[in-house]
Image 1: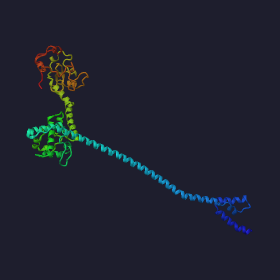
Image 2: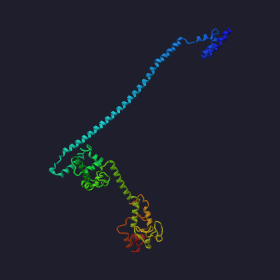
Image 3: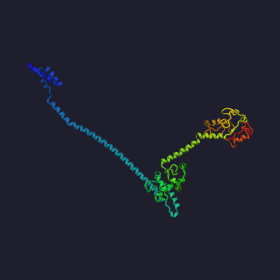
Image 4: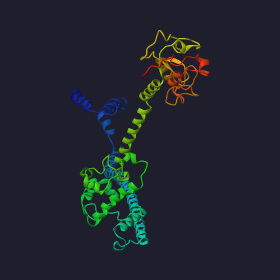
Length: 410
């Protein structure tokens, strides 16, 4: 028995080491609770039964049967959703495309309707006005009739080209965008057919511009441009739509017309700025001072003045600061007040009051009595000084004999 136990103990230990933790727990505790049971029997009593195995097998079978269809259904549902979204997007694009096509159709129909109205108006004018025969009236009368019809129809008569590479285009469009073609048409001496009508149309525009001048003629040049001048001047064929050409501004391309008007206006504004700018103002002031007579110092000139022998502006003596040709030259105003030339110039350059002031951008009144220094009167100041002063001038400035005050020559 001891040998048997000794033999079985290692095997029991080996089995316990190979057991799972739960089985080892049962193997260690059940013998204590049930001493009459051996460990092997206790382990056999705790083995899974058949229903548990069947249930586990059934669940595994269900998993393998139902899981693939489930994932397939989910995948197909997402694919269907993407397909529906794409279909909606394509449908929206189709609706927008239909709207664009409908708008294009409406625009085309409106354009055709306008062209039909213009053609009907042209036909109506042609039916109302019967073209005279050249045999009855002559070429001049027929030309006058053509000009009259052209004016009445607003330039709609024979407006489209029926030949060449520009067939179907309007005369005005060709004149604006094809200057080389216009030069070629005008350079032909004796055009025939439709080309002759196109050249006549161009020349009629020039004639109409000459007959009805506008305020913008100065901006666009003189209108003395005809066929004979073209034949005599070959440069006229080179650039009929250049900046210096006398063509109708409405025949020029819009960007060229605006550039030309902008340049002309800039030149006009620059010229006006020169006329009213500081340089012109200083020039007019110098001219005004040059018109005032320069005199030589004399005691009788300042007899009776509040500050005898001194300038009312700088209070410096004339005799000590006399300069016949410079800023300290003595000048007389029409009101017979004497000042240094530089002092009077500084006064005239000063800002004028709001209620008065000069008409040339600077002051024009006398610093002493506010009499306009530009009002020289009917009698020149030199003549007045030569004849002698009297009356009001004598009471204000004293009197002097003729020739006592010497007027310096310029």
